[in-house]
Amino acid sequence: MSALETEIDELWDRKQTGEIDAETAGEDAYATLDAFLDALEEGEVRAAEKRGGEWEANEWVKQGILLNFGLREIGQYEHGGVTYNDVLPLADASDYGARGSRNTPDGTVVRRGANIGSDCILMSPAFVNIGARVGDGTLVDSCDTVGSCAQICDNVKLGANTLIGGVLEPVEDAPVIVEDNVSLGAGCRVTSGFVVGENSVVGENTLLTPRIPVYDLVEEEVIYGELPADRRAFTRFVESSISDHDLFDGGAYKPAVVATDLETETLEATEREDALRE
Image (cartoon, rainbow, N blue to C red; front, side, top):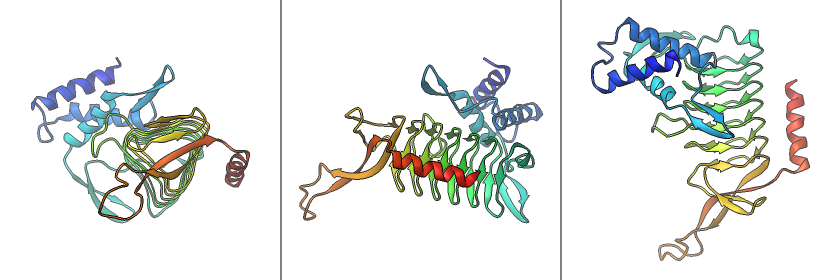
């Protein structure tokens, strides 16, 4: 256990027992919280990590983020000539260019405590929340939201109007994971700790959540909460258990996700997109 983790654990216990709150937190508490946010931004700590081939959430990191809300008062900040009110300022983006990353103006918002990698593109308007990671070479397109603690790995493409859910509102057990080289089409929604396996290509407007089944035609099984690696996925509708209800005529259907092998044409299309970014 690192010194920072120990300090966060101790601060969490004090907050839970009522020993400390936003009115009584002193300089030592804020120094710990600021060091924690710095470590998040530098990628030294992460909300989830892959261990032994499986993703595991770091509960103490989520606690550190919650402490940053529970132990801070709302303050006024200036950004782009606008006064806004929050418990945290926005992230300092002044070094993005030095690492080859771009964030376009008038609406690209990265909150303090988010980790932005090298050679990223953040198109406006887009929002990256506290604790999230945007990996090297990743594209966050216009109207995208990357929720709190979401782990977007390297060389990922988030199509326009994509929503990546967070862990804080409501509080979830684990963050969303999008592994390396994934392409999410425009309008996709990934929520509630869903894991998108590496190299997968997901069609536009696909909803990936643990409550919707994934029909994996490669392994011929139905799974929940994850899309295996190297898949092409898209939405289809399957018959619902309420098909025979008296309130409507005809069958009733519910959404599902179908996953197949990647096709050569699909890979060629994503390669053409890569060429446009070089």
